[in-house]
Image (cartoon, rainbow, N blue to C red):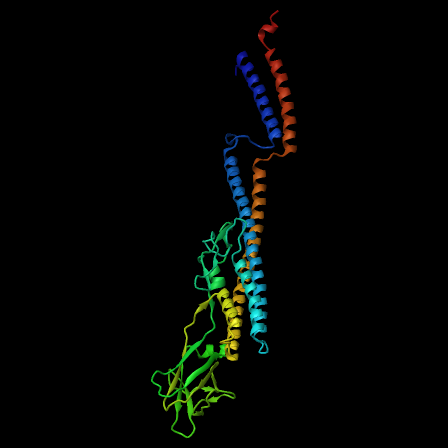
Length: 416
């Protein structure tokens, strides 16, 4: 094959230029620490790098979300624990108020202290986060969830919404709990109403009544009862029957069927957790009807307010011992149910924090894998590149030397 002088010249020149280009490329890699500068240098690796950088950006956002979620849950947990402590204090004061040796002034003093605890509870229920949002208001986080009602009691201004934050791929964590389910939807102790039948001709009246054993009454509820009087014998008697089937109910201590029991005005009749005191003189066939009331809800704040009002009473119409006992018993039940709500929610928060810990570990692992893969794709091996640079320098120098010799091989150089 014949090669012209021009071909030899340009071939050698291209070799030198290519060597210089490769040498510059290696120098740029060493300066930047990257295998390529533009997507055009390595399109496939570039697309992978973009995807990995997006994944790292998402992972970083998850880390920020985890921090926000944990902070919010820690605040809620702290608020609930503080409320739990206050409710325990109210419970102790309630038990103290049930002491029969206390007079009205003593109970008023206890009521005043309970009112202070109530203010603490309301303040804790209206806790705000660092963004000045109320944490127990559901989606209505811009206004205080618990306020005083116009006609007494307390009103919930929030809703039942629950906020979630995404802390990892396919992992959302609840970071709030509705104050409605926490504070407002507490089952009120079951109760009953009683009244002499409107067709009675005697003078029997109800002096006092109460549920003295909530557990027994819950088993009896929603059944009703009827007390029927018989005056055809020398001693007036009464019989207590169920409304549903007319069966005779047992009661008293020891328990026995309440059938033709001698009636003593002012004495108490006890059965199925109920205690009722009657007086007056009944006529034959007169009845007193007892009806179980439908279950109702009561918020913990109104339950405590109801307790304080009952303890204050009045000198003109003080609570009877039976009424006081029922007030204390009902209040303790409401307080215990309120405490249960708080404890159960704290347990849920603990579970959510565990999920956040798992998400944190998952995100960190994902970050490490992405960073390692990214480094493998774009970061140079300095030892390898330096070795290539040294080799390329040697090759370029050899190419330049050969170029000088080849350019001197012209035929004219031999014509003297």
